[in-house]
Length: 418
Image (cartoon, rainbow, N blue to C red; front, side, top):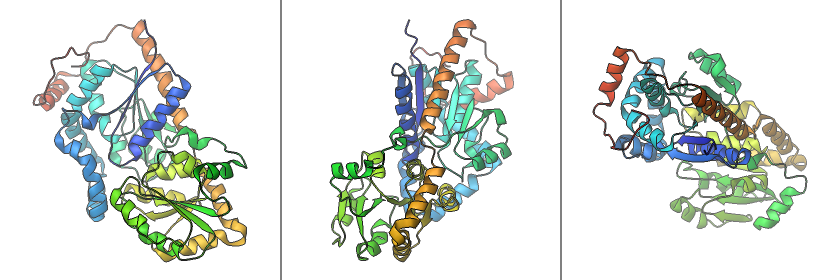
């Protein structure tokens, strides 16, 4: 009998952060237990998921880019206890069937979720079947966290910072369920490259080693990147720019057509972000939870140029209050901050890097992976020693759940979950 732990990581593609955190945990699981059976699944892409949820992933990019005020209003209107409870009821109705099928297909020993919408439906599945899988939910924003994340459904709720732990307690999450670990990032970001490592990395990448390197990361959600780089391009500072368009062809074309007056290396997309970050001195980016956490994990000062209203405001606050970076509102700000960082042999920049390093939690992915493997082992032992228990819903609760899922599609496959 194969006793390898079966780890299911649930995520979504509304932004990069949820998927990146999932990938980071997956890398850490493989490093800790190479025999583990590991699957990363986006439940929103399942055929039984309502189309509005599937399309909502791409709509997120469009809304935050084209209508940030609308996004902020929606975020704030739903960030209440009452609204979250109503949302959870709708989520059970919408996602019960796809998540049930996913559990039947993968039959996990433990579930790690990096997305906030799966907790209520999973809890409904567990209660209806009387069969529970250990659930670890990982929050992917640093300070401003939507109320829907805060639930007692998970066995462990991984929070990034002490302020978020307090928010969770205030929202009614049991203290024994909370673990302050951080946001999981690629474990490679926590590797010590040594004193000569930066020069070696730059040589390998074809960058100059005699200039302060500003890594600028763009995407469809960073509309002001080209404008923000304008001042640096004309300042005659001892810098080189490494610019990524984040896979956005339109932005890449725009950046490529600029006449650069400082040494500049252009990339359409970066698939080796840990290497690029370790080789750089400054990161210019939006205040996304994942990229912010990645920068802090390798002690990279942040120059924040875009902040999505809502969850990203807290990320920016965390960086600024920790002295790990600055927020620029226009190209002149970018120029002034960079100039001051470089004065006196870059003394201020070095201090900012030290503060970033203190805020960083580069080993969060390994800590989450260790929790997942522990819970998988305990769950497997429990199944061997305990008979399957009957359903634990009251008749009224069962009636309500059945009413919610009665109109959902079914599959003819043999199921372990109803």
